[in-house]
Amino acid sequence: MHRYWKKFVAKKTGLAPGEKCLDLCTGTGDIGRAVLKYQPQASVTALDFSSEMLALARENQKKSRDTLRYLRGDAMAPPFPENHFDAVTVGYGLRNVLDLQVCLKNILSMLKPSGVLISLDVGKVGLPVIAELNQFYFFKIVPLIGKWLMPGQEMFDYLPHSSLEYPDQENLKRILLDVGFHQVDVFDFVFGASTVHVAYKAANT
Image 1: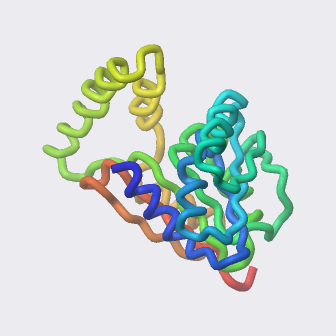
Image 2 (image 1 turned 60 degrees about the horizontal axis):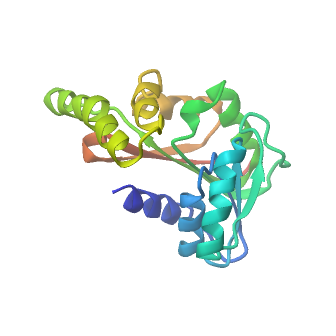
């Protein structure tokens, strides 16, 4: 299902030919490639702090022959000027930054007026019974499947535990508005277990 969610993220950029997108915390570049499939004539920069992840991304690039521009950099201090990007995407990355509000302010600064931030991440399920089932699946079943499919990988344990202190959908929306975004739309999938925030910068800033 994550492929559908990443296509949804790409579509929400609304990019026109020639416009610029930053895929922050790009990992292996999945969302950046989805953005290029949505708008092949966009200019997409993919930034990540991990040299190892970027090495994997560049290996994938040899197969896909995409035009992503990969850069190593810190989401807390991105090397871009103000009003530079039409869209910023991030998948499962905001949970990892040292200061969420500072990171979001940096993203807002990099966006052009009317620019958009689209963040895909794990959400909080609101319905109590489904929330319990989701927690059991996420914390017990997913790590077991992950260790079976990809032995030695820690991400299947890390992802659920890193979600514990990450803001729920409404709190993240409030934070986005507090740092200066003009409008924030929230799209929940699988009863809120996965969520996308679409935050717009005002047109007159």
